Image (cartoon, rainbow, N blue to C red; front, side, top):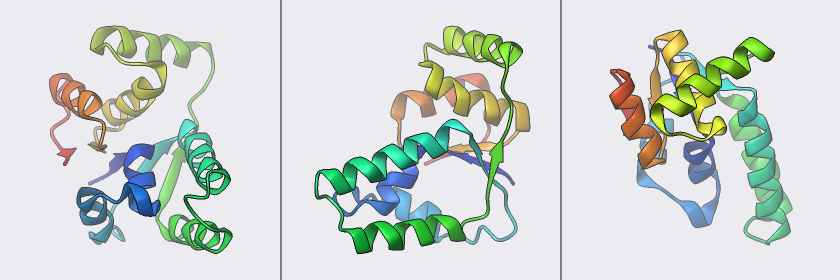
Length: 138
């Protein structure tokens, strides 16, 4: 099964002061036979989270480099949808499920790919269930 992973889960797995047993549980699963899907937005969120983590001394330079290696080892596939039609699709999802445009990107991808959604965002998880996503982690 494919999973869309949001950045809240990825950063909780990587940043020491955001440790989450749920994130650890998800990333300890064998993902070798699964697709981990992210919208292109994910990379900007990841970069910002790690950059701010370094800036605020939540992680050291060595930890930053180790985290990059850990994320790089994951079988992440980036969705490349973009353009005005895509913006309209995100708007529909955001409006229908009371989400930000950012969160709508994760839900829209999970709906389009008929995949699960892994997030620590309670509202996004709730809206994913309401949208009919059969597998929502946790």
